[in-house]
Length: 386
Image (cartoon, rainbow, N blue to C red):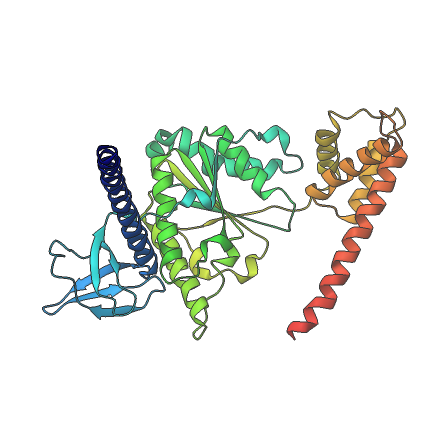
């Protein structure tokens, strides 16, 4: 009986030893997991580092520029020994101590702000601007395609062309068509998008856009709403206005750096030529100004024909009568396109497959009313600004 008890005791002791080893192994795994979790928690508690730019070095430390444009004097950590001006570094937020150098792309992603295409618009898609088409072909397309003619004659074509006129008259279409005819990359940017929040960013973006044009040459850079960037300068202004002026000065510098017979042309468009700074339209920059007017009656017929070419029209549609009415209302090309679109919708609402004369008449009335309401709203809005 005693032998049995001894065997049972030995078995219990063996099981306990085995269980203890397994538990110790599990405890060790749990301790490692807890240590890893604590390390991650501590890492999450560390404040983020600030990305800064090194400006210049002195005998005692570095002058850095933080993202909002302000500059500070600070020191670098002992392990940061290979720093040079222009480097991008990580700084501790409280004391701005330089902790680490990083490899950062200093270029702006200009493709966020530009439309880069090979346009499909042709001069045949533009009506009522035959004189303007001829002129822009002479000053943009011809120098890009046949620069040897200008070299033989010893004349310099304009570097830049300014298209001005009321909204919807076809300025953008004209720029796209000449890019298509020249087989050039079309880089489109809106002037208001070149004005950035932080100091120096707008100027850098201008520089990057023109660098992109050089890489994609032959290219046409089209700056729409250039009045947002190149309006007349004033002596005293806010920090935002001073930043616009910095961006404007960079644009002037880029224009001065281009050769007249280079494979890049600059086209700008504005609805407000009267507020442009004289520096932008002086000879050597945008020295060719092309007025884009509203179409006359012959132009209206041409534009009307372009937009109705693919439409199914009733036999009673009299283009001459419609053009006469549109001419009295002084519609732009964009308004004429809207008339055709609205007339098509009227037919669709009545489940018809052709567009009638009455559809066009109703559409014209609707566009007139819409424009009158817009003018009244603008008249009510302007007194708010004195």
